[in-house]
Length: 352
Length: 253
Image (cartoon, rainbow over all chains, first blue to last red; front, top):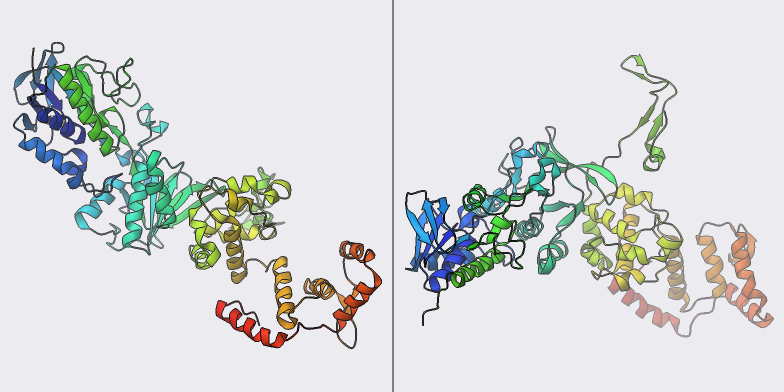
């Protein structure tokens, strides 16, 4: 019986799984498609992570370091899982670099990808330079350290956040009807960051409902509104247009509290992107025969399992955003749980 | 042409022309009715800042539009649904002045039961916030100073001048401030009770307690109305009061 574990994906969940397995002394292979560990937050330069308001370096950095320095973990960058034969606990896996390995368990942590905002043509992304995504706003903060309008480089007077772009939307097909879970909270945080640094910039959040669930309610909804004066307007933005007379954008919506249509001028519009399963997640589902949600294509846990890291296939554990939208700290905990579960599955004894 | 959803169309937005010619084409008849758009073109964000400058307005930012206040409000529930504290807060925060102005006739109707303030899950001091909104509206000339405020002012003036109030003078003086025609005596220029354009309901309201009063009390009241007595040593107290009022910025004279 094979005594090693394969971890697919080097983002938060995969790193956490590999770290746990390595610390337990189990030979672990970590494959990552990109040339860098850390997943979306590190590769795409997120600025501040919810809910702990720490940088990706602070949160994920220690995991990367531990995984790279642990002799039990074999990190393979630029490598994907191509094929898998056999049943648990004797999987024969084939990697894209030609290597073949025998592993006792597999942890899948292949993550998500951001929604492509160009698919919502009416919102003008890619047409008007001042319509940006919340990912681009993060990168504006992290890479350039300042807020500006891409069209003229000046500080905007007003910023609008458009919630639920690529989420809760049947118009995109059945694939995007779910809630992205992080968008409301991240917008509250980004709004706070803008207001703290530029108190004269007015920030508006256009929402249908604000889903800062659990303990996120105060820091990411109440505090932005009460302490920082972020304004919330109920009504989904239906169209974004540009007025050449004043060079500003117009956000077209109905203020559903006032029950009146509105076309209000804005200088910078931020689209709050939904989450979709990554290409890697869809591919690994086929390779390993994992159950997927028929609509969203995210992986789904086994029907008879109470824990959501147990997949429908014995010996395969799923963690993080490959199962649906999730925040970083939960991704890390799920990775740790999946790593520990994989270790018990292969019957590893903790060395003294 | 019939107007559908009539409730959404304010009368002032409906233009009806007898003869209408556009670009030389006579479109009278079916097309002579124009409804101006009701689109919100912009916010007036200074309005909120002015509310926040008022000491009572600070908690306006805490509202998250749950409508606990409106559901509790007796004025909303038993008098006029257009009196909606939650809605006023939303309108004030975005500075939708025209919407506030539409409700100017009901906005001062708060009965100060404070159910809204006691129940608000977010700790908004609703009743105070609405007063702050009203004050900013009055300052901007969007709403007339509300009638109860006129009474407060008259009451304060009376106390300031004499150190005490006189019931009769307060009642009939207030009626005068409300804009009703009153008849004054030629010598002391005081309003003569129950003479002039005083509304019937007010006459009845005032007559009821008068009937149960004894003659001596009525004579005393009338005497005080004509020759307003002062509290003993009031002029010295007045100076102290004046100083305090000046310090607190409420000096109205």
